[in-house]
Image 1 (cartoon, rainbow, N blue to C red):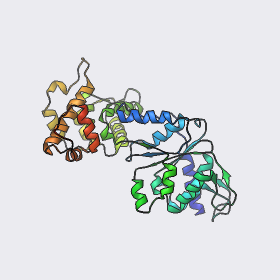
Image 2 (tube, one colour):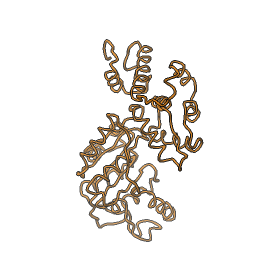
Image 3 (cartoon, rainbow, N blue to C red):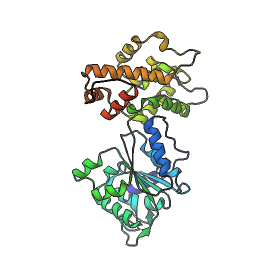
Image 4 (cartoon, rainbow, N blue to C red):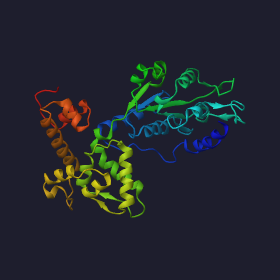
Length: 348
């Protein structure tokens, strides 16, 4: 274990530290505004926070913002991905070890809890933490004292713990894979991030944001209004991470170009038929952007309404079935129907 730890430990030490620039949570949808509001309300608190949501939605960005806006901002932000570190190294990585704790441990090493003292420790993929380590983590949260691997003396720490998961911890508790008492310790406040598909109006903002980040001088890609509207309707199963990869790919392959729908289709590697049907159903003037400003929000609402009405027609007005066709939660679809004034005899 010693030689293995020597190389991997140095690698982790280089990469699991605070970001060099301020984190940003892009989006003006109701969901994102609510998340930012909750982050602001928690700024002065040291309460544990559990960030939930599908992979790629930006859970670490939320953790970074919670740290940057807190009274601990001048101290370390330390991130550990519990699923990315081999099980035999994870305990030493988080809690540290004393010299002689195992073969190759020639010196005492501080763990991430001690490194994050007076700052914030972010434990990502907490649902993958082994059961024996869950017990040790619970004890630290209760006592605020860390015991290194192979050590006997406790080390007091002052750390705010933020955790994240994309799995249902309630199911994990039922299945015996996660401790219920630890869950309540971690879940003092929960912040839930929705899938990107549930906040399509944020997609144009994210496209512009990532295009600016990826730009190299005048080689920035741009998206016309129709393309942005179409991209807003994509499922984005990889969420914000997938969208950023898409923009990076567009920048690498088409630097400085305006990305139209056909280029976007090629970049997404998707079947062109849905795009062709969408373009064929719309007047040509609504596909191109000219000198006269357009109302992008109205355009997105119009397209969104059309898809929702088609899904409802195909599902005989059944909201739950329509939601499945659109890749939305039932409650999200109901909210959209109310906002767009799509009338149905009843919400099933």
